[in-house]
Length: 312
View 1: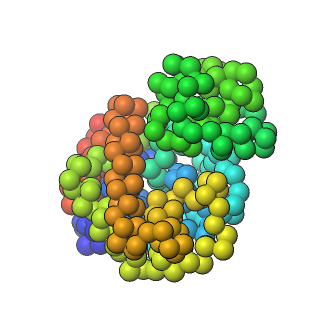
View 2: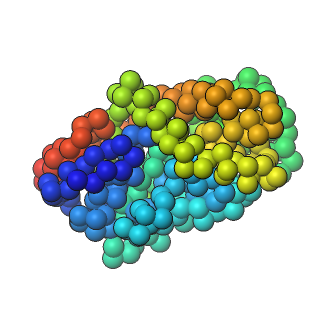
């Protein structure tokens, strides 16, 4: 058996998946990376990152990027390839992922960022870049003010509790005079339609996942997450997209003397659980045509055989 991040997958039961791209989505700590690695080892494939924060360098432990052991077991791409202080959008990710869709080795695209999967399988509007002065003005506004400027259609399409998504919609409106919803209604064709790939969503029960989230953060602390934060402290800027890594603001606050380590740990775990709840809501609403697999099933490979038979 293969043990990875507390998910056990029986490697002696073969996965039988079509020879085409595989997409694996699910909430944080649900075992997506373990499943991707198992498929790559048993049937071949290149693991490609679809997580919005794992693209950045500087926060390897807190974003749960693959460690050296996993990197030695299978080929990985688009992990830690973006400077920690750079901007990086869904459009950037689509341009980065496109070359991997045409390679002989099939991509196994894995992550918890629903917007990346949506853009990949549904298409993405070509929105002009946001001018720096508009970005700065948005940074200075509170979330309610950003939301008040948005139209109802746009609000219905984004996570209104996710400041990064709300501010992006506000910036689009300010920079172009058109709402994000209007831009989205004029999208380019998708790079990889759902019917051209095997799309898997891991469904994770709340209590099961909450326990895993707490244990995983403790594991991150054991692996050196506090040292990682200490190394990033001189470079810390809360406006960097990479600074949205869950646990980063909390551990930085501890190092700055405003939070005890137990309080920082508790705040990070709560933030991660809240994020997982938003992810579950997103996938439940938008992945109705994906194969849904119970993440708490220890024998995911046996369940995956259904995904293949359903497509035949």
